[in-house]
Image 1: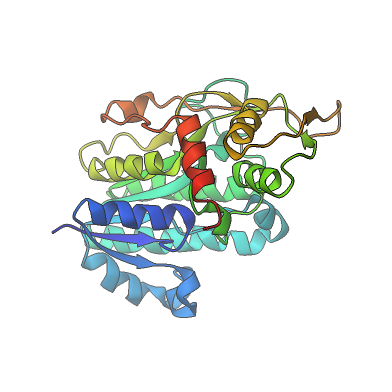
Image 2: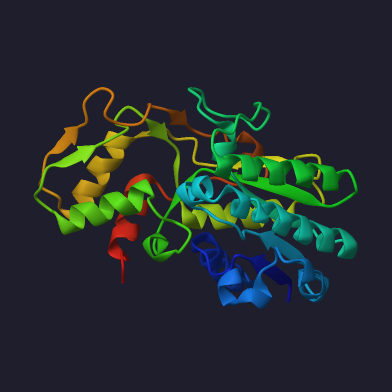
Amino acid sequence: MPKALVTGSLGFVGKHLVRYLKNQGYRVTGIDRLMGRESDLSLPDSAGLLDDLVSGCDEVYHLAGSANIRWCEEHPAEAFQDVVMAINVFDACLKHKKPVVAASSAQVYGRTYHPMVESAQPAPRSTYAVVKHTIEQMAYLYRGKDLQVSMARIFNVYGPGQERAVTYKGTVVTDTIKAMLEYPDTPKQVSSWDSVYDFIYVDDIVAGLHLICAHVPQWGREFCYNLGTGVPVGIFELNEEIAREVGFTGELVRMGPGEGPVPMQLVGDNSLLSLLGWKPEVPLREGIRRTVEAFDK
């Protein structure tokens, strides 16, 4: 029976990954700082704990870290502890020669109006994105030391349970569902009306992470993989899909010019991951249906 270590196992994606790996026949060990101070992998004394955890597994999935962009902006020094945590994980994986896939974010690309390919020059525009990019750079350095590592640049992930995750606050899917359920016939203002994103269901994310990690030794030359559908979805289209699913009857009201954030497009080219045989299986309408069905239950 293969064994996997998942850091950040109590987070939104982490919980789904643990469940997925167990269904694939893995014995899974999860660790998360929410378990207590002794489980905080950013601390100097975490080396011994990581030695024990990493040495006894076959694969490592490093998902631990803040997913709250606003919190990172307000607490930049604390946010950079995620870099220290990643370094500690990379050290242990290098020592014990274990393959590791670490979570990054599409936010490293910055504002763009083109489908993003992994070879594009990162241009992070927030503390959160800078932290993720720094982790990528450290992974690249460790790769030069023969660490078997790949990075997964995750696009706009959503799915059941996200609204209860501590590190996910203010996500567009969960916020929109919550607002429409609470005020089912009240006009709803829609900001970022002209923005286009790549929304990917969490089941497709965890399947992609598993595939990336399984191919790290074989595909070591591929360092970063986009984890996105490649399908552009406008914010208005997303609101329409959610309104249809929750039975929202209010009017969708466009915020006037200058009232909302600057429009942006962040859509991923997933050609590299497709070469491994991966493709997103859950279309937006089905993903929204499943998310609403399980919302806050």
